[in-house]
Length: 309
Ligand SMILES: [Zn+2]
Image (cartoon, rainbow, N blue to C red; front, side):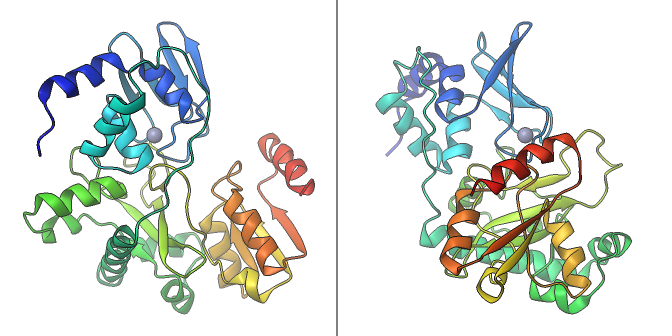
């Protein structure tokens, strides 16, 4: 079934992008003609998501994601084009009044998890074959091969696109997952990657750290799949230890792991302690969480919040 052109045009024109972004729980502030908010598609610390209400288009100056209302829903809700149009036709057309109610993301389907596992395996193979990501980690003091192998270190070195068959459906699925962006390029290109796992041991997300900061100055250095943060790194540590050292990033936890400290789980950046973390710690009977973030102001607040739990 093809979606009628008029319906797509009606959605693009009719749905209020600003209200849509707010409805997904993103705070926006006006600055001159534009509106800005924290980009949900990368680890954003300064609002880089720019929204142009006149054109009804958005763009992120950090990770380069961009598009219209349909593309926003595709990425944020992790659905394909058809479903995004459907969602917006069903309830988005009258969205001229902001309704800041965050809608939870649907978790990945079994099919998506399988595909994600294949991507993780592909990046892991590339990590073994292309030394650049390994060399980058060595400069960060992370060189323990058994640690890297146990955590399925990967490298998005651009070879994924070479092996993809000319299959529109597969490409669409990879775009839906956020592995490919709307231009069909790799989201994690140039990153060392680590899978993030759900409670059943399936990959639910990927963390990517750019290995060459100089190549694209101003670009996001820490990347995740778009939408809600899913999955944890070194998740099993909570099962084995009553005390957990919560770090700011996967890289920080890797540093501890290489030093023989196993009871560490990272947040998704300084504001990145999710319900998944808290529920998992509780489920595993973790008694104490030591917050080990870099000491700057943004982190002090976070420590206070954490101590209330
Ligand atoms: Zn972004």
